[in-house]
Image 1: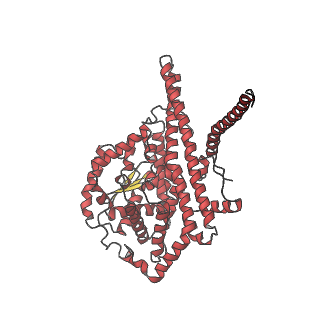
Image 2: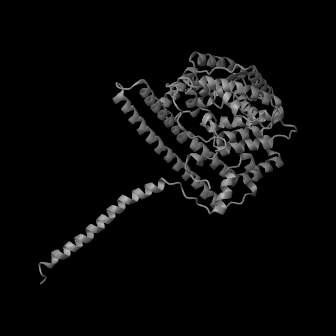
Length: 498
């Protein structure tokens, strides 16, 4: 018979073992999420050895046109490409989490500053009050800038990188198919393949009916205060008007083009039904040669020629569109996602709303956007311009600061890869034409005159009270951007490049 005193001793030992095991498990459970969270807070590890990662990464920094020429010579396996694709997606997620943390910290600092201002408001001197106002204002600007980076800039930059990875992987097969279509003559049977008959084709029957719609839209926009002021410089206005008319004469547009140059820093152009074309100062600043500008204007001309606005106006009245614009503006002040271009313009006055009344706000379908790309390439070519200008400008927009002030180029548009390949295919299908224009002396004169316009606008904007920055004389906060010279998205994501 067992001693009654030994069983409790064995039970205590067993309890001690179970207790220590439970404590160890609890400790692991506590530690594991922390470790996992810490891992998520670190940049993703490169999935490929340096001798593979570096050349593939360098290829992704090249332009679309360079990759179109070089893709068939690059030797990366499907497995390597897939690992790089996942790395880019992980980097995008990490970068967005990083900026979510920055935004959260700024929001906490903002609430603390506002609470301190409330508690001290009766005892503050004028200079002290201004310091609080500047701090709150700058935190608001940082929060808005951070949100736009996280919601628009970072996804756009990585989408562009992923599109170039797709090009490396898929373009060699696509190119073979295109050359086979050229060799067989099948390419002539594509929609709008009759490029020698541009101007005599039935692209947008009934265009004259759109003129009144466009005029009504402009009148309502002006009455609502949604139209930015016009550029007054005659050299700039005449140049843009002459270029737009040249494109129109070589298009399927059958109504007179009416051109307005808007004094807004948004990098954009938009067309309203009836041939009303609006080109913004920011676009003229951003283009590097005349063929790039011709490509953008030709694209917008195609929207008008094909009556895309007419199709979409059936679903919305001008008044409802203006109401949508006001809603987008409201999102900015309530912290929702909205146009970064609109955000920048609103720093300098409420008139900046006019920029978003483009076909994007109307809900252009991807098919219509691709159709405008195709027709736009044709119109630029017919007018004697290098049609690759459109691709080169798109690349600049997606790679540099253009994604910030030219959001309408990307929101609701087709995937980058599809859009670039679609444009390149159309260029390859076009008959060869000698002496295609890339730049002119007139473009250079316009650029020179534009500098005066920009300098005057910036001088007027300096210290001007606005809805987002009502306190004047505040030091500007540091707000990271992916500017020319610092083109890589990693510069704002704390991701090592070398």
